[in-house]
Amino acid sequence: MHNPRFIITILGLLLAGCASGSREEKVALDRVRQTGARLHPGPDRPALTTGASLADYLHYALLNHPQVEAAYDEWHAAALAIAPARALPDPKLTFQADIARSVTSLMPGLMFDVMAPGKRAAMAREAAAASEVAYRRYVTRMLETAAGVKKNWVDLTALEETLRLKRQMLSLKEEAIRFSHAEHVTMHAMGSLDQLTQLLNEAGRLRLEIANLEDERRALRAGFKAALGIAHDGPDPAWPECFAPPTAPTPDDDTFWRAVVAANPRLGEMRAMVEMSVAQVAVEQKARTPDFAAGLMADLKMNPVLWRPLAEMTLPVWRKKIAATIAAAQARHDAAVARLRTEELMVAADLARMTYMVREADRMVAYIDGTALPNLRQSYDTVAAAYGTGMTNFAMIPETQEMVLAMQVERVAALRDREKTLADLSLLVAGEVPAGAPLPARTAAATP
Image (cartoon, rainbow, N blue to C red; front, side, top):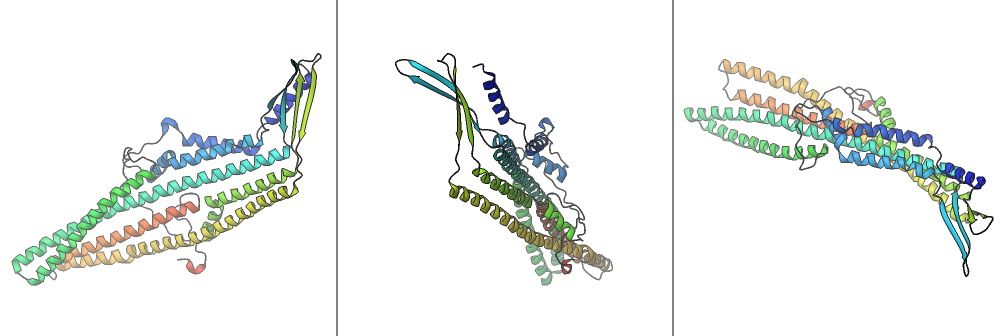
């Protein structure tokens, strides 16, 4: 078996099956490796300490959440599948022998399935498109994880701020109760007894609200821990406490909409699925092209050695089957295009709803900061001055202070709703909505 033509044939077929990867494959693998180096930094993983910022929590979650890791592994697997898709099928060893009273011929051989280069290239493009779909899903999972962390962070820090304000309200209520009780004891007035009863009921309700908030804090901490990717029995992170979300104006409209169309991860995934369906159509269209198999056997019992070349070719004669296969691939392409249009409609509707909610919260915060709180503080100053001159009793002072605190609780609630909506909006634009980012109002009348 030292024939040089035989050796050249084998080497040529092996090299054809192990040709260098396509540009799409190299780009996909390079992107996977670069992302993997950031996703698995080894001993340099961040730790959460007291005073950690929201950015620290986001960084921690993206490096530790199993949802992100699973999406990365699926993307990695899809990128690695490009090489098998473009490669030739494995060669096959063959063996044949003729046996009568003894072995009269002994013919080992080697067989190769030779696929048309255009079909292999189309299959590689389909696998590359599938890798792009997996990458878009990975991006979506990262954004979902980040949005989940931010919403849980907002809920937890807003609850801490609400608890602080409620405790101040309870302290003021207890102070008013002590004054009303002393007034009732000294004056023996029925009116002061009614007022005392009302204050006691209100204080009891505040204690109930505080107890419910403290119970809710345990549930929110469990949700925040899960959003960070920490197991239930894992160590608790440093809990965030400072509620200080930015309050930026929300002008502009079309710029944000263009950013959504360009960067929305779900739309990107749908577009990648359309490209994959195009590649699938191209693969199925290659079904009209026959495939080949070639091999060579040698009879080792003969002298000189007898060489037996082998060749096979498929006959794609079932035209109806081929036409149905191509039509099915085209139908899947049309379905992918329709799903993309459907997703665009849903994104537009979600965008309009979310930006309305942000503008509504902005108007509430502006009303509280610009009208309600200044008026209440002015009322408090007036009551304090009147008490100094003896024109009113002391009970009016903590009551007015409590009204200021209640309005601050409403402000916290409005900011919490605003920030959670902005976290959902970040999913539409593949990242955080920056301070002062233009929010879309699809018509001029909708602009605040």
